[in-house]
Length: 116
Image 1 (spheres, helix red, strand yellow):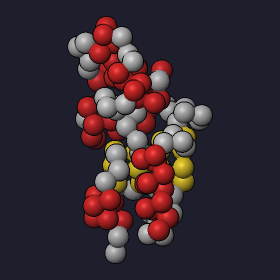
Image 2 (image 1 turned 90 degrees about the horizontal axis):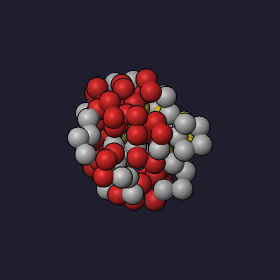
Image 3 (image 1 turned 30 degrees about the vertical axis):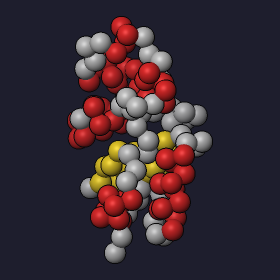
Image 4 (image 1 turned 45 degrees about the horizontal axis):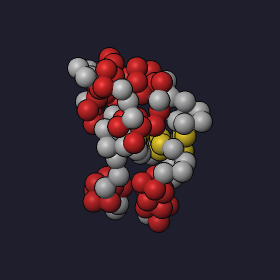
């Protein structure tokens, strides 16, 4: 299974996810969307599969720093536009592979998908 781990290099949650995958011997390719960017097609695919609310990171400082105008009446189209402009708004990590797409890191969810 070829996996891509999307996120930002210097993120504590990303470190936990990378450490977990490496300890379990799960191979992956890392895509740093802060330096390499992210394309609209990926965001649209993720939002279609998971819902845009699961893809955007409302808990982070980047979201909290948005203007009230950007936060009000947020919908998928506007969320994707914001995430394209500010990749730090994307929940971390996103793991994508054949028949798998996860947003966020929870060891029990990873265990369910990658162990055994």
